[in-house]
Image (cartoon, rainbow, N blue to C red; front, side, top):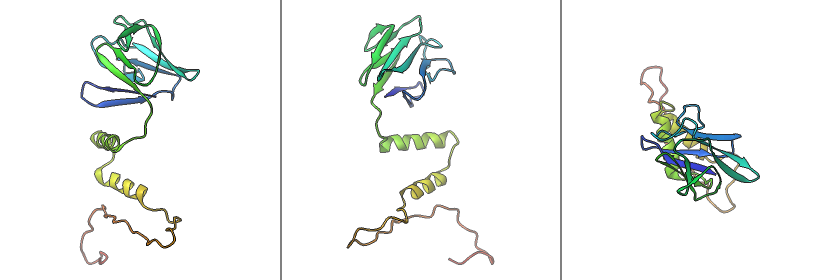
Length: 164
């Protein structure tokens, strides 16, 4: 399952449940899922997997933890539920395959954070979508050669540069 919410900067934050023993939610930088808000405790609540369910537990927060607008101390959460800590609403969803919008958003975030550049990302996309050499075309079908654009730096022209 996934937890999804919009942070104060307007970015969609997603966290997959189940990878760690307990997912902590709060405003502390040490929380697994950091949620900023006036009424959010440092360690507001936590989620853990137990016997094929996900259990949400309030950690004694002053302002409470809500599931579908009902205050809870402990609750089983499921897809479609909305967890509220302070004024932040966290959607509980099923894990889904990434769509084009999600992939583009992640690439944009990676570029914004000083990760890979445009050319590096394009190279990775081309490499990951190129047909494998051991794949043989179906009988009677022509071999298709994808149009791949070279995204490498232009070479300087000079006496020692190779002719194109």
